[in-house]
Figure 1: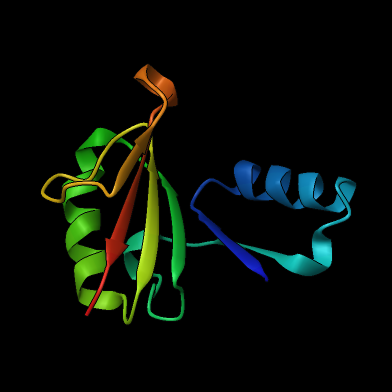
Figure 2: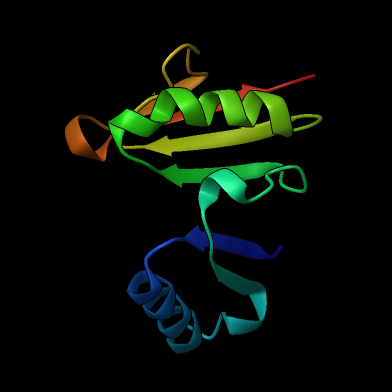
Length: 103
């Protein structure tokens, strides 16, 4: 499958592109410098988010509006505000939460 990354910080986009190239994954990855709030999540059915606590509630609303079918979301560091996770792995700052969005 192909992975897509969205990041507003140009240095992190550059770093991600270089890391993918070094790992031999350049043809399987795309990284965009974009505002996540303006980036459509509609085409994706697997989403991994490294967010900050202050954005999680609004991000959950965005995903509820935009994702279709069965979409899996992995939230790293902070859980979504109003959904119960289907699984929780790890503890502390290394915790990730898995959610399934269904229509």
